[in-house]
Image (cartoon, rainbow, N blue to C red):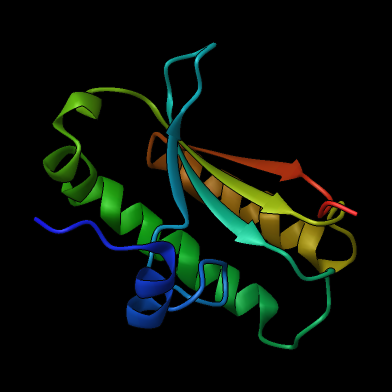
Length: 125
């Protein structure tokens, strides 16, 4: 299998981020907990787009399907049986309706045995 460059990946599948529900932005393992972490990247400030929360919801649903339908374990057998966290990396703390949205999303995700974590990671200056 030929390895694609980042530019080739972006040309083929688009930029990572919550605006692109077709791809998993990042898969990593938390060394402290050994949980598999599926990262969603939101670079925009909250309320930057009227579609923002719907885009995040679509991305969450795709990530849930990826895990619950067994594709994560199929593509990464070394992660089978591990706990999974969905992490939203955002540029600023959620506010306004985003707070209620993320609280409801975390509750729904928790019912599926997964966890949603919001990580505020401002873009580098």
